[in-house]
Structures are given as C-alpha cells and as structure tokens.
Image (cartoon, rainbow over all chains, first blue to last red):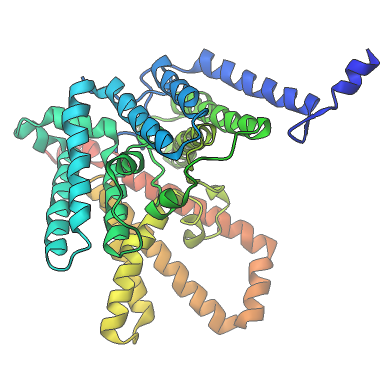
Length: 49
Length: 397
C-alpha cells in the first residue's frame, strides 16, 4: 500500500502521476459535458469564411 | 455533396485519429509529406466527395504550382501573378457574394469553397505567392503546396499560417512525450468546452441577434463579443491541439485579447495570424512603397493611410458588405487614434512620464475596459441587423 502510494508521486514526463491523472480527469469531465450539451450542425462564426 | 466541417461528429475525429495513427510512426520526411498530403485530400474527400477533390481541388493546386514556377521570372512572372491573382479574387467574390453563384449556376462551387474555407486558402495563396515572388523561398512542389494550402485541421476557420513558418518546420517532428500529448489533448478539450458548452450556453440564454433592443442592447453587446471570443478561440484551440498531436506546427491565434489595453495591443492578441498576415502582405508593402515615394517625409500620415487601406480590406475579407467595411473603418480609426495618443503622450510626458503612466494600475484598468467596449461596439456594428430594422420601419417598401 505504502509502495503504491509512493508510486503515485513517480513523475510522468516531469509531472507527478497524481497531477497527471487529475488533469486527465478534468479533460474527461469537460468532454463529458461537451457530449451531453453539444449538438451536431453547430458551426463556428468564422467557419465557411 | 459539399457538407460543412462539423466538430461534433465522429467523422471529424475519425479523420484526426487516422492522421495520428498513420503519421506518428513515419520517420522518413518524404513518406510523411506524402502521407499528410493524402490525408488532407482524403479528409476533404469525406466532406466534398471524391470527384470534386480529384478534379477541382487537385487541378487547382496543380495550376497554382505551375504559376508559382513562372512567378519569379521577370516580365512573364508579373503577368502570371496578375492572372493567378484575378482567378483567386474571382473565386473569392463568388464565395463571398452567393447571389453571383446562384445567378451563374455556380452554387455548388460556392458550397465547395465554403467547405474548403476559401477565405483562408486565398490568404495562404497570397502569402505563398509573395514568398516565392520575393525570392525568399523556391516554388514548392505539389505535395508541399497541398500541405500548406489545405491542412485538414486548419481548414474550417484557420489559423492562417505564414509560408515562412510552414517551410521552416522540421520535416520530422520530435517524438511526442506524454506531457506534450496531455497538453495537446487539454487544448482540444478547452476548445470543445468553450464552443459546445460555454459559447452555446451564452448564445441560447442571452443572445437575441440584437432583436431584444432597449437597454438590453448594451448587455447583449458585451455578451455577443464574449461569445465571439469563446467561439473563435475554441476552433483555434482545437486546431493547435490537433496540430501538436500530429506534429504539424499550427500558429497561435489568441493571447488573452480581453486584457488588451488599447487597439494596437488588441490586434497583437486577437486573430493574431490574420493581423500578422495583414502586416506582412498589406501594411508593410504599402507603407514602404509610400515612404520611398515621399522620401519618408510624412511618416504618421503614411502609416495612417496604410492602416486604413489594410483594415478596410480586412473588413471586406470578412464579408463584402457595408457592415464589415464600417468595422474596418472603425478598427483603422481606433488604431490611428492610439498611435496619435502615444505620440502626444511621449511629447507631453517624456519617456519617464510615459513609463509611470503605463504602470498606473487604474489607468490600465480603464484602458482595458475602454478597449473591450470599443471592440464590442465594432462587432455590434458588423453584426447588427440594420437592414432588417429598416425593413420593419418601412424604408424598403
């Protein structure tokens, strides 16, 4: 258990694993909101310019 | 069968996935270039259908390549560039004024140009032609031209990459580290969240296309500008994120524009790729040309004329109508006013005084608010449905 907890601080590409996972979680939350609230056929103001 | 590029579809992300899957393992420059070109054409094929891409797009790029080979030559080069410029301008006008397409039976051409994002492609063609004509770069081959003009992730809404930047990027990008991949995915998530959650929420809850009128117009003006920022910067975020994932350099388009303290600062933070394009291809050549003719006698006047022409053209690039022409005129007025104000400040306060003035927190806050309001007003002018109101009031009857 202690070893596992310590491994949480092993960095990935200079970023602590726990922070790395938190960032992935935040990405996932935002993308889930996009999936829930987004809709097809939505174009951008500057699209088709 | 031209369809608009839609980021809320599996099709778009399938294209990104395929690009990632095929480009990442490639370590030979030529193979990677070809693969990217085929992916770009394949991506367009998904939206336009195979024939318009094979016949229209590829033959267009081949023609551009041929013209660029002749462009550096004296005499004939100018003729060829004029011809090419007129063709691009003609397509641009057909694209911007759909009634022309309808009148001459070119509606499908207009839909194709809209899908390709022809306004951006036209600016890339201009940048490429200038680089070749100036002799700073040799004419690119067919594959490089496809990759510069039609990068799939920058098609729908830019950014407008400078040809110099495109040519300078390494043929094989450095391998993607886990941290970089995470940053790229975060940018994509940022963009998708901004557009499909924040911008859409503001649009649905607060924007009425200025039909609510009354004092709400002022509130809507602020929210409309905020919405535009979220909407536009969202696409740029996605493009930059996808670019990082597939190892294709993609320029930044925004740098916290709502913190700009004047219009000059604003244009260094908003639609950066467009303002740099204007600087390279319109403002500097105009200014240099006029300075040479007048022996540099009227620098402020020449700068003002160059700014005005550059931003009127910029307005018409957005849309060929009076709204956007007025928008361009307002931007030019704002920029000229800022340059004059800077000039007066330096004269009155001296260098040290200006430094203290710029460091003042309250002045900074006021400047930021005024810049935001000015830019929000210009967007209101560009998007306000004046014609509709005149129609209701009976002026068009």
